[in-house]
Image 1 (spheres, rainbow, N blue to C red):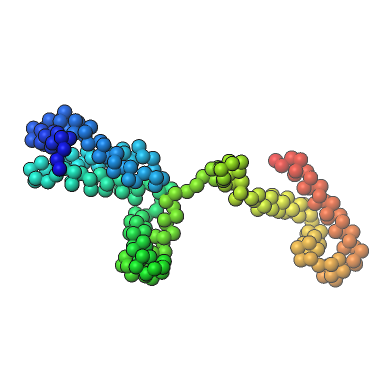
Image 2 (cartoon, rainbow, N blue to C red):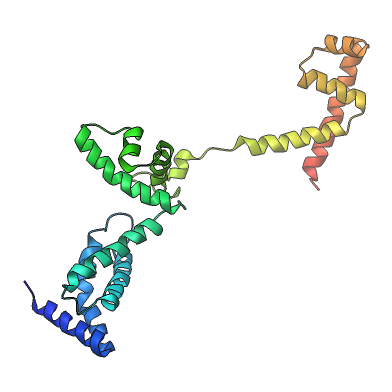
Amino acid sequence: MTTTMDRNVDALLIAYHRTGDQAAREQALVELMPLVRALAARYSGRGEPLEDLVQVGSVGLIKAVDRFDVDRGVEFSSYAVPTIVGEIRRHFRDKAWAMHVPRRLKELSVRLSRVLDDLTTELGRSPTVPELAKAVGVEEEEVIDALDSSHAYSTRSLHAPFDADGDESLADRLGVDERGYVDVEDNSLVDAGLDALDERARRIVELRFFHEMTQSQIAAELGISQMHVSRLLRRALAGMRGTIEDLMEDPT
């Protein structure tokens, strides 16, 4: 059934395409915006603001108005709807991903989402990777990559509230102190302390604390008495402590 609006749009499109009437073109775009909003609303709730989808759909509408052939005898809506919807879907495919994913994986991910529903209904269970690969005609590795890439569609901020109370963020739950930074700093101080020792004192410290040898074993290794080892070890540790304290007071 042809409505008054349809007839108005048809008349405007004919005026635009046959006589180049730009005012008719602009008026047609205004009258067709409710169609764009209705189509955009179908895709709302998928992570993109409705107004953004309307803007994208408007691009599709402009393409449809400019490319429509008024002499083919085809209803404009039958041409415009696929064009507008295609533009919205392209937006989701190319823009609405939180991380960069190759286009082929995005397209395969969309195909898999459709096949997954069909196979689940047909088999009465979740399909396996080989079954999905066979259904879409790709290698199993590609299916795995596409399924993994689907997780990149949206991300959650680490600073977003973790629950309804909003007392904690995701970072509060996931964050941990990185011990590695402290270890690096401690190791650099120990290295500086060792560098300040003479060769024999450094050797004694390394055998005692890095190789976990007893003082008697060190004495046998170096051919000196255990008492001498004990005296040299105390002196070496005192020297290291002084060097490290100096560095901590004046790190430059």
